[in-house]
Length: 360
Ligand code: 5GP
Ligand code: MN
Image (cartoon, rainbow, N blue to C red):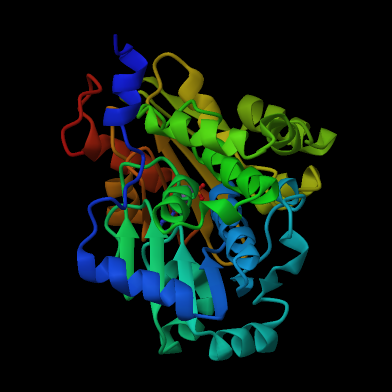
């Protein structure tokens, strides 16, 4: 008798590369065999998926005998710097000449976790002048497919899951060791908020199971990512929720706004506000949450929502940004009070007074 699980595993297939056409298949296989010097890029303000994907892919390709370097526009927050081989990463902001030299001598580049070269900030011209072949692995909607080979799967919760399938499909999984598997699992865990969001497709658990079988250390990841906060960060969170949160009951929305002075008061370090935007969504009647963070040149927005409401269109239409349906980002140029006023106007045109979406 065939068990239900046997059926499940023979019919389910997390490999999103299985349907690519023969010419792409052959071209990518050739590139993977012939290229020697590989550069991997990911987006600015890199998150766990960006860094985890880049370092996981790096580890496997290095063990395959390639000369691989990760080049980032700017550094990772402290809670990601423990990842294996993070110390080898080249930060363009600190070392532009070294980064340019690496790109010039590369014979293949990978672009991970961004759909538009605008997302890599000051690295954009460097990437755009690269004449050689490129491979994009990403899960953001509405991207520009700017690479020679674009593998964009918006139904995947993380780019790390796509990197795993890429390695699997192109027969490179045998080179992924426990360090690389830990990097990829970090990407999956951080982009799904520990399997809370963007993880309804059971494939993600099959990939997770395989990464853990390869030695990925789930407990270490949770400890390093979620249990290493400073007291300042916890107090900034408390202050944000008690003194800097506005709830718009009528629109089932909330925002948190933090000025540079607020951040300085709590000795803000890069990454300290990561996750703040999710807190308002844990209230029963809030389905749309925005975090405004004042920066030197603009106010950065993080937008989050519950599944029934899309925020990426709002980020694109009003805030020069974009992202996923339920997690997006953008920018506002002006004062904090203008940013809040603009948000309130957007709420008014997006919802009617009973909270129904009229212009989503
Ligand atoms: P976060 O709020 O964590 O900075 O970003 C959430 C999501 O929105 C991420 O998927 C990120 O790639 C996307 N995102 C953030 N900022 C921008 C932006 O300025 N432009 C675009 N297109 N996407 C963004
Ligand atoms: Mn991602």
